[in-house]
Length: 203
Ligand SMILES: Cc1cc2nc3c(=O)[nH]c(=O)nc-3n(C[C@H](O)[C@H](O)[C@H](O)COP(=O)(O)OP(=O)(O)OC[C@H]3O[C@@H](n4cnc5c(N)ncnc54)[C@H](O)[C@@H]3O)c2cc1C
Image (cartoon, rainbow, N blue to C red; front, top):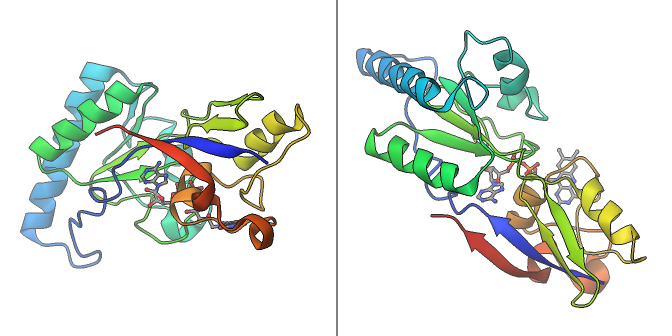
């Protein structure tokens, strides 16, 4: 068996900042939407169109619909597709300073509408954080939160080992582990979260 050292973006307490009541848009909601759109434009100017995707960009629809369930297909003001942990911390700081709400998505398997997508605000999509490596000596696996279980089991296959993880290969290690994580091995080795050795806190 292997345990996991896990890169966690400790944004969970922040991303739920609710902006508006869907379906009852007020003047204030429109003002917030305008502010979010303006900030998204500035972010794209600064970070480039490959990192900040606006609704007018061709990749937008595919990215906004990357959540597993249609219940979570929302219309973010823009989608930030980042590659470096320092970029996440900087972006969150800018969004907090400007009071723009955001959601974090790893592999997007939560069907709850606003868990990992957002209507007005910024969707931070972290599927790029999908690195997986292991150390046969310590038996530890390091996983980016955007990794899928398929990649984790594939890495461990090299050593003929397995770990307490998801039962469906496509699910993300980030959401499953933070949500406790029921595994085929749970009767013997409890939950995925019980096997995490450490998290990296980015904020
Ligand atoms: C087909 C399917 C099969 C499933 N099988 C199993 C199973 O076998 N066992 C089981 O226990 N569950 C299972 N689930 C439930 C699944 O674990 C949850 O939906 C989980 O949230 C998915 O993780 P994700 O990274 O793909 O999702 P996301 O929707 O991207 O993330 C879920 C939530 O966690 C937050 N989050 C994710 N990573 C981090 C992080 N590093 N830091 C802070 N916040 C974070 C996101 O913001 C979001 O709110 C299954 C779900 C589906 C749809």
